Length: 339
Image (cartoon, rainbow, N blue to C red; front, side):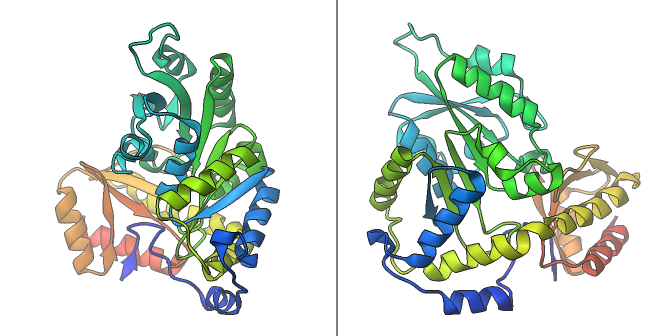
């Protein structure tokens, strides 16, 4: 099967498996796992942040970030198609007692004026207290769109003006950096908290990281424990993440080229409407005009191609390091046959 459902379906390479096998381990709850400590420091250096904490998943990374910088009854402004609003099981409310305020965006980008209009009046004690502005880069449901640096800077300026905190869901920040040329630390410089993921385009089997200042990460360490996230000899997982950064980060451009191949094919097809005229990274979302989403996915699967639902009316294809250029060409042949 050619699996383009997600970039989370990758499997550890032989080199990564060897790194995991050879990993030196200790008890991470005691902060004594040397490989975890190495990973955290390595990422602190990459992103130029004071401290970092290895966690099990992207959702945990986002939710730990939000929990450390909010209190019960606070409100978080986010884009309406963002991951934290649509795909994290209402965790902000369940785990932090915080409310999400979704704002319309264009390709995942919120206008500063719209965000500022959503901020609650400080004097309105009967309203939730606006505490955080959150953005997602790259943006999953916006076909992997990269948030322009000037947009991030403008939203950060709004946060500063109103004494708010700023969170970046950087699950695919690696893709944003490779495609835009903007360094990881430049993106991170705008964030009070930031989550990054190793188990998507980078190809690790599990794991994410929370970045922030020392006080925030110390608080996150305690909350991670209370949520059952205090793991022990997890150097075997941290080793996979380190291997992924050092060996697969620079390969992400290949995934972007594969996505361009798919987008260029679909853009020319009369029975397809692309969600976005430009594909920034590795996600292609498209709407079939003469066949239902379910039928398209089912018929492609019968011929050896796995796709996923992008939205209620659209299909999603995500390229990754486990699908070659040759397999991408084969995927296009299957799409042609089905359409």
